[in-house]
Length: 86
Image (cartoon, rainbow, N blue to C red; front, top):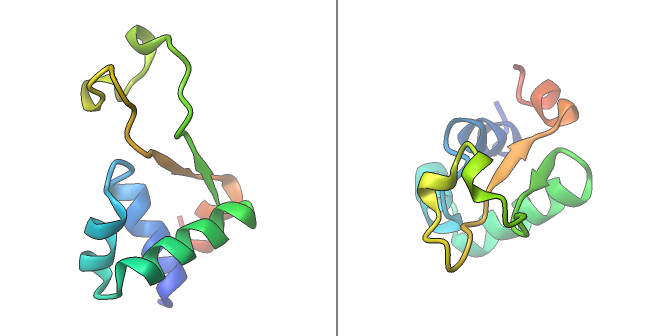
């Protein structure tokens, strides 16, 4: 499994993980993890939910928000699931 597949699997398992947490899990620098996430998002493997709507009551991850700011949340697209071998 290559680093991109490992990163996609890590995000699939922990969509609320920070760049720092992902970098620790994969034993890479936070800068590299951030670049990989940005590249995977740009190429359509990940979708970012950083700009959530204000309908928190219906959001399945609202427990993770402090209502003053939303965490960076990613999810795999169909293309991302295919690359991750899911």
